[in-house]
Image 1 (cartoon, rainbow, N blue to C red):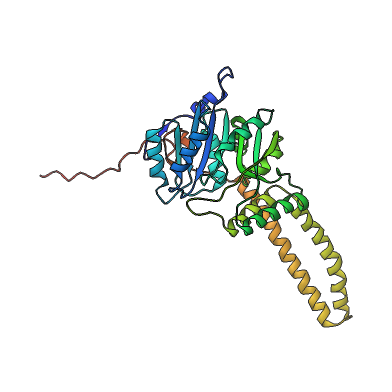
Image 2 (tube, helix red, strand yellow):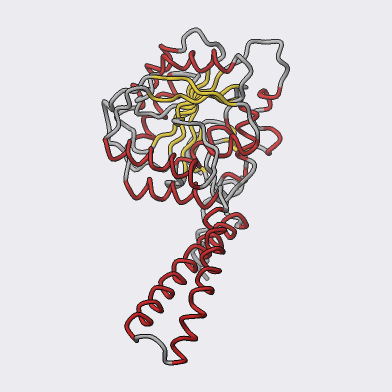
Length: 347
């Protein structure tokens, strides 16, 4: 373990979140980062400026295993501003792991989550907080005039349509990762430890009170976009097969139809009735259908195995917050140097 990391037991982490409500409610801004070295100072400057009227304020950067100078810049920020906290993963664990770590180590009763690229305007966080004050646990920002590339906008629209219309998954319409959430509720979702964590689907699943607010959207000004078509496809698979049984039910229906169609065809083939070409084509079609069914069933087995696994969603190598031992590779044991053999004594 390197850096200014401290260890503690699970019961000692951020107990002030559950403290009394007599004092002013504070805010933790969770900022996931992955190779955002060119952006972290700008994010810090804009967030502190936009939220200058909120006290206490904490800005918690979650470094998702960056390979650039993101961590070094976070160290410098934390050394100059006591409101800055950071945790740094041992490797890249993904966006959902970054959310989980941020909510776990937030010290204030409310969290705002915003990406380090600041495509969501920090000055609109108070709009989300004002909506949350009406009695909501989670408030999502919905982008107006979205500035993302066309393939990303189309992919997101198709994903949402398929989830809602085809698979019956409730998702806040148009919601983004720009959001405000009650910290205690966010931790409840983190503690579910699902094999396919997907915050947008988990909020309605547990019955949390949520709302949406139209917010602005700005083009990225520094760094590179992390969007990839493969990443969108992977997230879609996590959503579709992690939160709906309809694909598996469709497999059952296809299997019944395959039996009803395949049995007469097989009987006709054995009886020598019908041309060989159509019978062969039908057999090939049924075989392809069986492969599709096998693949879908395999995907659900994969989901079940992920739900059962013991692997933690993230491991932290360095932080300037007090860490739970189970979130570190060494389990809280001190970093001791390996033994060095002593030279044999002369006779």
